[in-house]
Figure 1 (cartoon, one colour):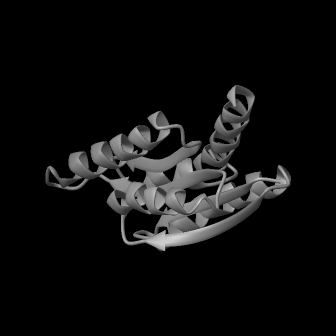
Figure 2: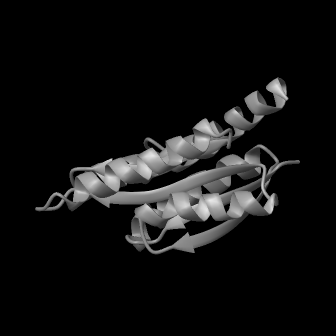
Figure 3: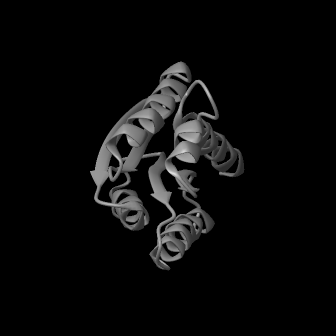
Length: 139
């Protein structure tokens, strides 16, 4: 059994609850153990994953969060840099599922977060497990 860390940016509680529901369900159905930590926003997810990876306690990681476009350039910074940070960690060999939604509005976020619709939380958890299996294959 693998040990998975879910790092969630709890900025929009109701949307994160949906993402977490999908991720938890996918991991439970796969028979995997998981732990959840919360960070302030999506920009902090890669840093939390990096800190956790240094401990050696976890086999794979799932980043969950929601970034909704606003009126300023801040959306692009948060969306791009959180994805870049997770990609850099993945390129260093960490199995990561990126479940950070970057959307235009709340309706798009709801559709993507809901486990009964697009289930992006569940997809991120499954991606982390797939990358873990690939890493184990190449070990």
